[in-house]
Length: 491
Image (cartoon, rainbow, N blue to C red; front, side, top):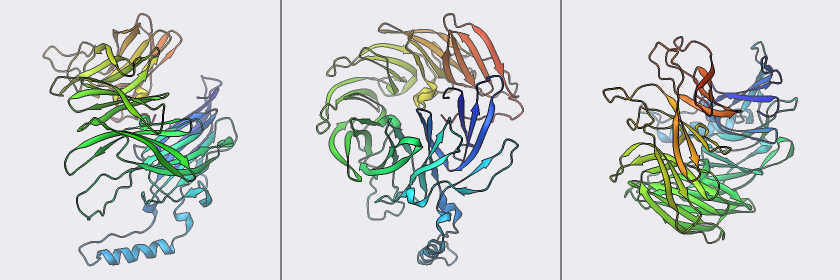
């Protein structure tokens, strides 16, 4: 949403290579007007909106268009298949390799199929990373033109991080034909695109780091350098080690200028947050070490502090005044998780991070793996997160049936940061409008004025923020009409 323009991005199903972008004028909220709709060939990897310009990153598996063959037991051996596929490539035209798009009118009529971007805007990486193209589509939310293919690279895309001036695309170049001996985990390739005016973008540089990224929070640009947190697994011995590495653009390469390792030996990264010259890294296997990494000198990053507690945080959110809020799971001393927990850390002293407050909730929360499900309202310290009772058992804020079996009703837990203490305030649940026994979780929340707005699959509810009493709600569709199939948010 930018002013009176609303961009809606949808896909027919998760992973579908048909990304639909619809731009609406919502000046009249009671009657939104569709301005244009386009179908982009590709799976949506991520989307960002910067100063009225939306940038979508998509991956298109273009090899599906070509009649490639595979070795089989009926006479087509590996060499014959290789020769046939080389012939397919040699006889193909550029149109077979570029992602496409078409427009859809308001009455559902489809326009002509066209290439989404010019071949001159597609870069080829040094290392093979898949027979697909990852590309950036730019959309001017206040202009009269449709999506513009800004730049691309011959590579699949897994993780996207965006700064105000760059987009970074990370991917793992899986080697399916490694028969040279014990299998080692491949590095992660990172491609940088510079963002320009008018929706333009251009490929800048590529580099690599040891190990794999957790998510977008594992990357951070600071003063032109890219900081990256990864976990490297040795799949032959089961050993693992985590790193924070610093890359700097030099020509068309992202060159490593600094690195610190030894974090979470035998563990995996569960959460990362970069704040200024500090990085906060959570690893977990049985306990939750929270590492503080000093990046003031990017050529010499170093661990300055460590805190070990049971459980883990899967999402870290700054809440001001040297405080860091964690959303994750509590655990016993053997490492078995016992339910969702909020944790408040004092990281004022980088050498001595402290857990100063915790709030056990129970169940599990989508906020652990999707930060869009988490809400923090700094005006009064309100915290809202969805909780499911299906995993992690019952808890003080998760309803249970009398026999101890968890209730299938989904809801959100409302907590509050009061000074340096986490306080539970209550829960918000939607009325079950279904008779089919479907589980209808609440997935998103926001604050509008004095109300908390919660959004589920088939209902939106307005709840007074002070008293947590329901004020109003609205439903759409019939949840029984389609069984238990619903649309998932893509962001």
